[in-house]
Amino acid sequence: MANGKKGRPLTSASKKEEMVSKIKPYLQSGLSIRKSVIEAGISRATFYRIMGADKNFRSEITHFRNYLSILVSNALVKELFAISEKQSQGQPLTKDDIRFLFRLVLKTRFGKDEWGRKRNADYDPELELHKLRQTFN
Image (cartoon, rainbow, N blue to C red; front, side, top):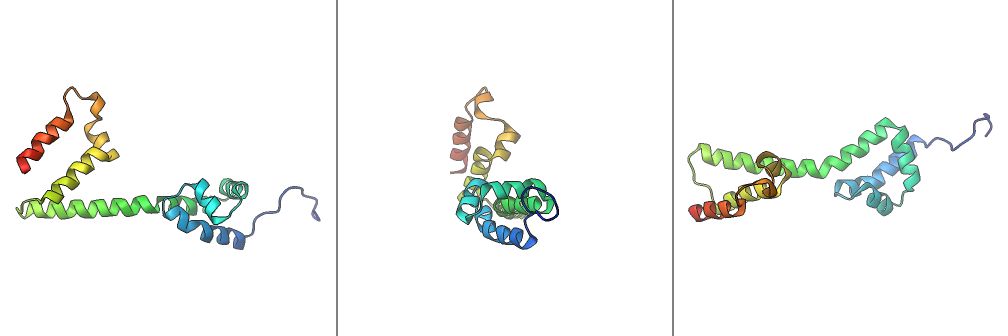
């Protein structure tokens, strides 16, 4: 190199922007970084080198990776608010509302973290939920 420094030249801002625009839709759709890089046709080595060296690039990639989970969280919260509003107005919950709440508790990390996992229970939670379902049906 002319200035006496050895090694790879730094990646230009325009190349980084191009890389971000290529990988963005794949990350936002929920693909892993590994799969997104392959689909976008980006060198994995280059991608990780920039991730390690450029805080803004890393922050942007993290933002795209969180996009789908934020959308899902917003949809869940919207549904919970709708159910809460029904309850506060004294309206009965529909079967769909009840199914949604059961699935939220049984299938999400939130439910498992809040109420524990089945393997730690002294009773059968599925049986207990079945009893509850019979009450609402």
